[in-house]
Amino acid sequence: MFKGKKMALQKLNTSISEQNYLKGELVSDIKHEYINGELFAMVGAKINHNRLAATINGEFRIHLKGKSCDSLQSDFKVRIGTKYFYPDIVVKCDRDDDHEEYTEHPIVIVEITSESTRKFDRTYKLDVYKTIPSLQEYVIVEQDYVMIDIYKRLADNWHHTKYTLGDSIHFESIGLTLTVEEIYHRVDNEDMLIYLGKNSKISV
Image (cartoon, rainbow, N blue to C red; front, top):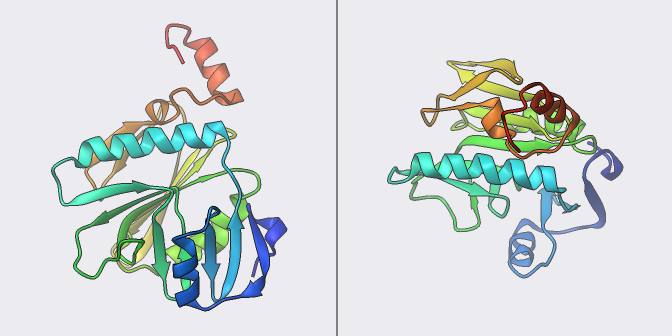
C-alpha cells in the first residue's frame, strides 16, 4: 500500500467503518478517499487541474444531454468493494442500484494527475479500476505537460494508447471525439505555450 506522502492524499492515523465513513463525508468540509478502513484526506487542486476537469466534464455533459448517461465531476464517489475514490470525472448510466453519493457502475473514469498523484493514479488506481466490470475507459490526463493515456477495455483485455498535441481521441463508450488541443484549451503549461507560440493564430 502507498504511504500518504507518495499520494496527493494525507493518510489519517485512524480506522473507521464503511458506514461511518459514508455518514462523515456528508458533513465533512474535506473530502476523503477510503481504502479498506483507512482514511485519506484529499489535497486541493491547482488551476490547470480545474481547467482540465471543467473542459472535459463540460464536453461530456453537452454530448450526453438527453441521453441515459451522465457525467459528474469531483464530488461523486466510485465504490469498488471496500474502497471509495473521488475521480475527477465519472460517467455513469442509469441503474436502479446506484446511490446518491456513489456509483459501482461507471463506464468512464477520468483522473487528472500531477507529480504528486502520478504514481498512485498509474499503478494502484489503475489496477483497482480495471476490476470494475462496467468500466470501459480509464483516462489519465497530465496537467503539467500535454499527455493523455487511455486504458480501453477490449473484450477481456485492456488496450493502452497515449495521445498528445495533434491527436484526436474517440471515447468509444459515449461516442464522442475530442482533439487534445480542445481538452487543453486555456491550460498554462510549457507544452501548450510552445504549441501556441508555433500556432500564433490560436488564442488561449
